[in-house]
Amino acid sequence: MKNSIKTIVLVFILLLSSCKPNIIATGIKRDWSFDSITYDNEDMMYYMGINMFTFKNDNEIVLPYVLSDSPILPPSHITYGEWTIIEKKKNIFFVKIISENKAFNDLYNLTFHKEVTSGKLLAILISKKMKITMRCALNPIGNEKFIDELVSLTE
Image 1 (tube, rainbow, N blue to C red):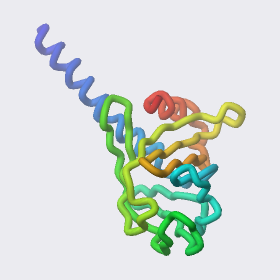
Image 2 (cartoon, rainbow, N blue to C red; image 1 turned 180 degrees about the horizontal axis):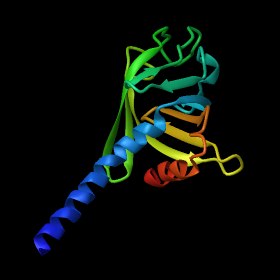
Image 3 (cartoon, helix red, strand yellow; image 1 turned 90 degrees about the vertical axis):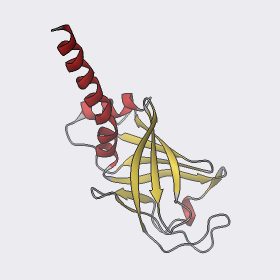
Image 4 (cartoon, helix red, strand yellow; image 1 turned 90 degrees about the horizontal axis):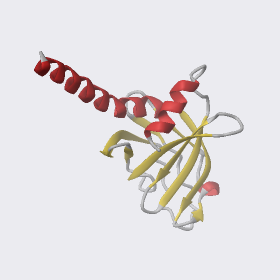
């Protein structure tokens, strides 16, 4: 009897831990507008064709194109790629973006935050050279608990 209870508890723990990347993926699947985007601490906001990402259900991502007058980033009119969530350590999540748009083809540490005044869902992506702070275009409607869960999973 004790062994079967231990087995059930172990299976439950494994199921919960395997669900976290799925919860994070569900949280990122939406439209995000940039609050800021920097590359080597240089503001790149004005060199983007649009200032947003769209993470789609089928692991596709819509990227901004990079204007040709960007002083640092390579110009690109490629506005698509693929994304996946990776959990490297407990509650440390990354988004891997694979694209021929070299400006965004990278591995990003992902954290979720909740804006204090509006309750809006925010996300921060940080790679070796780029930092993107973005806000959810439409919060998960009526689901403040879900936002809080995303924030707590990536603290």
